[in-house]
Image (cartoon, rainbow, N blue to C red):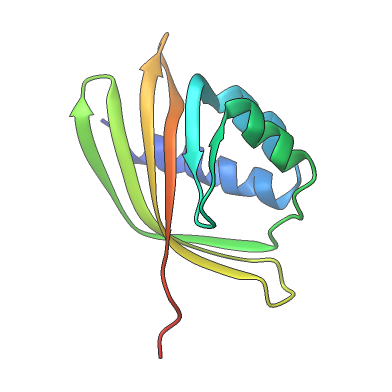
Length: 122
């Protein structure tokens, strides 16, 4: 498994959230039965993700760190990392992320994405 290839997909995803093309990007990347488990307590299916991203305010900056790859089998992996993002208006986001990818027809597709918020230090 190549962590660089999967990190590139994560960067493409975050970039799409910054430039307001997230609905199109995740609509293509997610498996038909894919879900996102979000930090604010929602579980969204693929079509709900696409709909929600159509009107989402863009992120201004993002950072991926502490990334690691967990191989599940030849065609499934989990990418785990710490993510930080900011909209520049005090709306900052800091969480542990897990993305499960499944290889379908030679391409990686997002099957499950999960966020666990990291509380502010203090």
